[in-house]
Image (cartoon, rainbow, N blue to C red; front, side, top):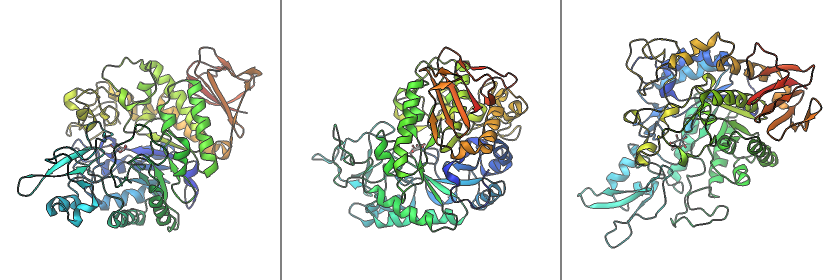
Length: 548
Ligand code: GLC
């Protein structure tokens, strides 16, 4: 763990994502909270991570799990208080754990004071200029201003009602109607966000994760999305004007004694456009979704690793490796499916899944990502090998599900409250006998709990702990360049395997049918199979780290 003042800590950090609503429930009301996180910090210390990223914990109506922020300077009462957040940040730091908070610049909640004021002030008012209010098209103004499609499906405009009851202007929301988009051409919007950054940086947070970071700037002419577009030509994605914003954020981050870190959530297929956000005076890192969306296939993963390293090298930024997060299907489930790639549009109920295969691959994937150069992100529960839960429809709360007309199961299946204990009414998520968790936990959830896995050397938790310990103690895995290996133990590496060295550690991952032999006298540091065995070759869907 990186204690003390280390300005470069983020280059090779292991960052654990906490979804506060589902991590641990300290007060027994069925919703996770900061008290719960404070009780469980020891788990993160023992796991061996460097930092915690919290998805939004601010005051919010939770129309989109907190990505609809009503007040950035207050903690949602369901989660706790600002004083508790300050204590949590300090306690985590005592344990060597830095804190990253989420900032959501694209939109606010429709209950945010600015949006309420905009609605109250009416058309043409300066209050409306902070958002995208427009008259509708057509003679009666009842056609929406553009046909842009929401990232959550459906339309991106909602019509307002004037104070006198007549139909009014429309406002833009790339996500749900409860998340009106901000107008980043407005100086108040820029000033406010820089103040929000300072507010949290002053409280000791080490950095921010920037939500939907390629979306906030819009073409003010609001044209339709063309069928094909050149770099920077899309009306609401990856516009060149974003870079100025992040440069000014970087200046704020750099003004701190230990410079604060900016991590972008950037979904962009074009690796070069992606890398522009990581130039020296912009963000430090951004999530590598290309890798996350690829199937369990050696060629695909090799290509993703290559493209990623190539795109990052010229800007001098470290890559990041992400197997999952609060928006996507859990790896144990995804890798157990015939199509193991990830695509929001392809999620369906009842997809056949082989959890035994998926679990084996997820273990190998942990060793693969843990050996790659750069920062590693872990989503809560992946260290327990939790599967995606297929929830009963009546339990689902995610707006993605409803906006798809019920076709898309949504994202709640990876947000089911964590099991901490073998038994108990919520498997230790909250105090025994407390309110039922906000999403139901499936039967047998306790078998996957921290308690059940802690002393089991074959468990996913044991593998993650060992992996992070070796990663920390091997300098090659921190600083070594990645060198692809053509041969292992004198035999060529099969096309369906990956083999590379970092310093004097080699990582071999076998995604094909035939065993990949290891050197006879190999100094085996770690492998993803049963730790009681000492395999002489890397078997199907397993991985090994050896001293090279
Ligand atoms: C990001 C978040 C997601 C949220 C969306 C809108 O993609 O990760 O959870 O729904 O932004 O804020």
